[in-house]
Image 1: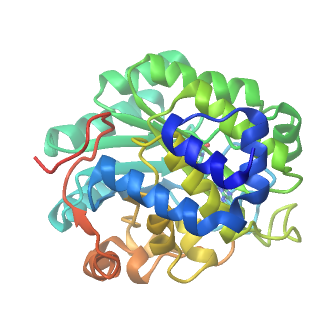
Image 2: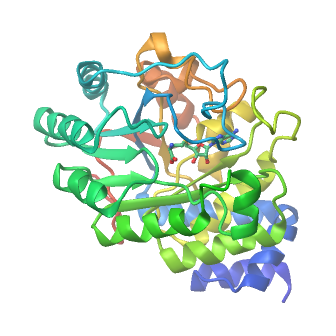
Length: 352
Ligand code: SAH
């Protein structure tokens, strides 16, 4: 089918076969104006011109894993490691609440210094102090029992990118003790337990093919997550992938638009990695259909240490306390940042 027609069809049916996905991944850039316009319209039908913000608290950069792409992998002896205490995390939330954040995302390496009960206690304390806020966890693969414990403690959402749906490609990015099968099964568990779950992948990770990306779109259509996080791969100088090229900003934007048309209601962030590779990248993300931004709410003294990749943004409009700057940036393209939890819903979102 002609690619322009295929885009129209996607806009109406919100579905893609694998060969259609492959065609759009290969040829989408040539039709990007059309893709972006339709994706932006779809986002506006779901969310109006509202952008949800999430306060991102990177509470530990210790990690037991050794993912080849990641700057905080356990083998990186040059990483300056830190952990936040429960009180420090609560202080971030207090500051974030005053700024207007109503979702807090606790992200970190897989750091078992925090037991399941420790995390549950932190979640409970945040929910007690801020009952009108959502708590999102993003701390990797754990058992069903632990995910259940955290859900019962009040966690609302969980971000766990599947990274790549293809089992062989997954094995090229991770050591043997990690598997795509377990990662994917965690995502199904999280959904079953009632979390709003977020999957996602890097664009342009080493060895990635267009077919891998098409498989990612197939996997997402099966899983149907409430959130999808994608961003370009960016090399980190202390990892095995230090000499690999970064992913393409253009392909990331094309994929954001495809995802928006596939999943009109999905919560779709314009990520820090996109902003890092390209000035104004987050605004471009919104123009390609994204509706979420996650500014950094970690304490100032650790912000420069959660280095997943080189030159990771953590100041300027990326910083939570610079929300005014971000508001201006999005106002420049006719959008507004709202102080709301911004939960997943299949209704059209209007500010209540
Ligand atoms: N430990 C948590 C959080 C991981 S960090 C977990 O396992 O989910 C969040 C995301 O950053 C990862 O899922 C990965 O997709 C992304 N990331 C890591 N290293 C990266 C790099 N070098 N370039 C771009 N994105 C990266």
